[in-house]
Amino acid sequence: MISIFLRFILACLILPFLWATANAQAVSRPDPGDTVPGHQGVTYLDLADMVVPVLAGTSPIKIRHIIGGDDGVAPPSTTDLSDAAALPVKAGGKERLAMLFDLGQVTDSAEGFAVLALYDLGGKPKLIDAVNVATDRSTFFRDRSRLSIGAGDDAIVTTSTHSNSSQGYVGTLLIMVRDDRFQLIDSIFTFDENYCGYKRTQDLAFKTLPGGHYAAIKATVTDATAPGEGCEDKQAKASTQRISVTYRWSKKASRYMASSKAFERLAAENEKRF
Image 1 (spheres, rainbow, N blue to C red):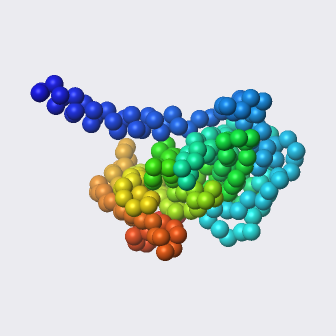
Image 2: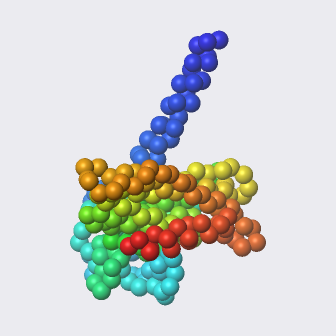
Image 3: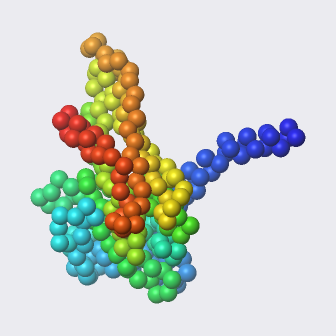
């Protein structure tokens, strides 16, 4: 009896680690010349060339920004795909492959250009959607980049960031795939500071709440301030606050809806501290 109880406790302790490890293993960084599994003669460079002008020098499509505000532009050409990342996802009960190509900064823009592309590998590889997900200089899949929101559906999380000696700027996009098209759930901006008198961090975490057609998603920012180190300046008092927003699927609106504007208020407050 005791042995069974101990095994149960051990399983509870190990499962979160296994889930985190499984997600970390889900994102891969294939070499452009690697063969796409199950498609002899097709490489990841071939997938990239469907959307990013690598070889031909021109892009076959214009790409909209996931946040909106433009009619779509062609991505810049590149010869460097070293930052390309692949993430298998489920969408509408179908297996899909999401690839993220960070193309770096664009001329006359403070932001970079990062293409999130969606492929159908069920037969001959086919590009089915692509969006620009850059909100800052460097863009990548977040550590926990895939959230299960249903038996056959995943949400995707990307992060854009840049930093200087004392400030770190982070933009996180929460994205779903619906009808084989990327759809933004929300954009969340967080801001870190590290000064002589204090260190302030804003860490973002997600968890899903089962129920409904799509699971609800709870996002929580832990805003923590700690005294600085090795400094004679007046030190800030340690404090922590948690800011949470829950996103629930609205059948009427055909999209996820936020429970509050708490993250919008946080972004406005952060902007005042730039």
